[in-house]
Figure 1 (cartoon, rainbow, N blue to C red):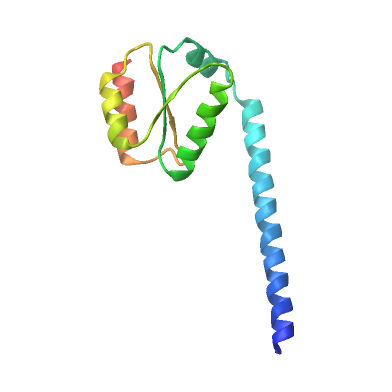
Figure 2 (figure 1 turned 180 degrees about the vertical axis):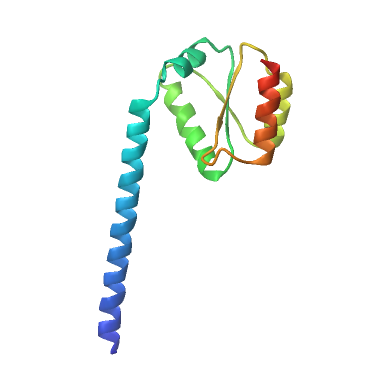
Amino acid sequence: MNSNSFLKQEVNELKANKNKSWHLLQSDIEKTINLTDEANLLPISRLIAEAKTIFVFGTDWGERNTAELFVRNFIAVGIYMTIIPSVTELRWVSQKVQKEDLIIIISYSGEGKDVTEISQLLKLKK
């Protein structure tokens, strides 16, 4: 195989991978929209509107980015939230949180020993 045909093959593979990635992203977006349509957002909307203080925690890098965008979008409508930067601070907040406060934990997997443990403690406080 000469270098020219090798390069063509590489370009074709890159295009195929790009198309596959694009279709996966598009599918994920469609699934998210469908889930949002199916979900009853009224209870969480009510909790957000009635909370005295709102804390938001993202369990990992992607979730923290989501938390930042989430908080940013609420600033636009005059609802202010505090981002919790790490599990250590989440532990501190969970010890001091009051009944009228709200902690939103964003986790794509729903797993993680520390967060699961803290979530259980928060459930016991309600």
